[in-house]
Length: 169
Image (cartoon, rainbow, N blue to C red; front, side, top):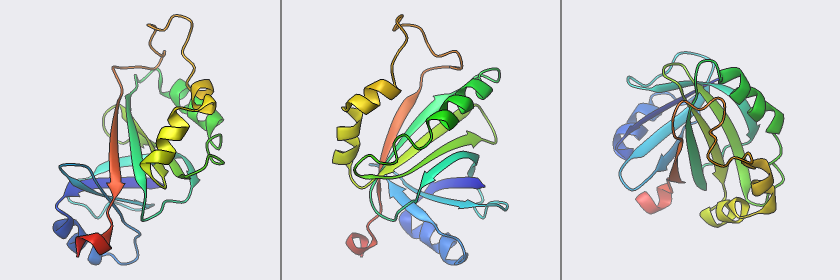
C-alpha cells in the first residue's frame, strides 16, 4: 500500500478530492498549511505529491484528532535496521489511551522516513510522550550523544490538527 500527501489551501485540496470519491482523504493543518493524505495501491491523483510506501500500518485513521509526524533521515545502509526496529515495535502503542493509528512511511524519493501517529487529541499524545512506555520504547544508548546507526541527519517533528469541516463552514 502507498501513501500520498500534498499541501495547499483547504478549498483547493477539497476540489481535487471531490473528483476522486472512491478515495478516503484526510485533511490536516498546522499554522501555515493544509495537507491532504490518502492511501491507495495505484498512482497518485495529486499533481505534486510526496509519495511513500507504507511499511507499518496499525490502527485506523480517523477524520478527527491530532497528528504527529516524526521525520527521520535514514542512510541507505541503515534502512533495513530502521525498518526492522519499527516492524518489531508495531502494535506496542495500540492499547495506549487516545491512540488512533500509526503509519511508518518509506519515501519513494529521498531518505526521510515519516513515522505518523494519530491521536484523539494533543493531550493523549502528551500523556503518552511522558509515560514510562514511551521512555522504554525510546531508550537511548548509554552514550546519549551517540546517534542511531541508521541516522543520516537530525530528525524533526511536525504536528497537525485534523480539519474540522463543521468549523470551516
